[in-house]
Length: 485
Ligand code: NAD
Image (cartoon, rainbow, N blue to C red; front, side, top):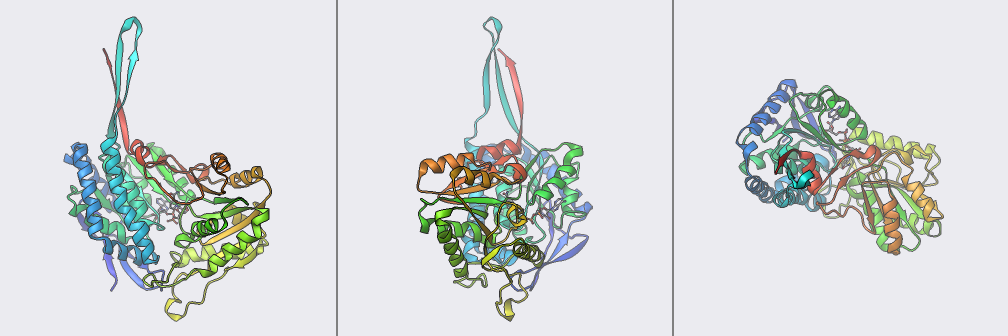
């Protein structure tokens, strides 16, 4: 039976101005009726968050906040299977992926930011003044206040908790707007945060869409103190315009068109396994996924054939089937977009080594948003499919002859999120990785994260960095106190 998902405001479940349907991308069945927040519900959510920040929560000690974060992490683990079920229902991703990546990371996000805030010190400077006098400067971090958290559908719980955990660690209250495609885990998290003992109003959820809906009402609301957003670069621009009149800080984790650079001296098997993971994980719907693969010419055929073989070995199927490696795309709408790029690639002269179409998976899955994992050769950096983010299980392989050429081709993009370098020459690995104009560059691995390290993008891929103390900087604003001694 389809669930009914309400907005959550000050701990209460609130109906919206209408409901919309959340559809299962596996088979097209109905997952939930979701209450869309109108301006009145968004107003109430911002007011509830404001009351929380101005109440006892705003004065909670670091010890109280870290204790809450740890209880939330524990409670996520106690309800682990509920989260897996909700994540899988919304996204259609394989259950093992939801378990190992999304839900596990949600708990880790809360623990990691509890550790970070517990260990964070103060910036302080002893300033020399004329005539032997001194001044003491120290910066007192304070919460930003009411933070609007707007997140996408690809790793919905992981990306939501990546923002909510540091925001709460710093003493803020949040109003979250999950993607209309993935409303379930944000609602479940509201239960868990309440069960963990958070004061009401600390975590509020408004459901809906972007323009003329909850997203726009929230980002244009004068009662918010900042916006943390993950999603498309174009949406980031719209949100920047929305907050410009009130000059609020933004933290943006946006799109990518990430490159892999494969050198002839790489460990071929390890590289092909890593490369395949980086192209096809979560059906290519990870912002960090590789969509451009630059390969040294002498190993080009081996890499192209090896990647195509690995693509063919992927098993599309129901999330609970043990053999399933790959789920559907998130929606029919997104599949239309990906399909348009599959057609465009052919029109632009691609050779399709594998994939390129909608797969035949039988009548049970015919209503789902399935797409074949696809590998192209025969394109260059001038092709639109090599320049624009597809956000699906696709990669274009392009040969290079020299290291300089590889670096130039990889950096020839308006995006700048991530890159991966595959080589057994570690000097080269460091050298090339450091030249990548991206937020994150990996060598002989991909999507390996230490949550204390900075995460974000250059160019169209974002503004600011989150992770560890970088998140603390965004979710607080310091008051510097200067005392003449
Ligand atoms: P999207 O930008 O369409 O939507 C993201 C969120 O913004 C949703 O909740 C949506 O409802 C909301 N939204 C849309 N328009 C809005 C508006 N005008 N005002 C306020 N809110 C609005 O992105 P998506 O399709 O959900 O997600 C895929 C995109 O996210 C890809 O581009 C991907 O690369 C990017 N992404 C980036 C990262 C990162 O860390 N850099 C991580 C994951 C996904």
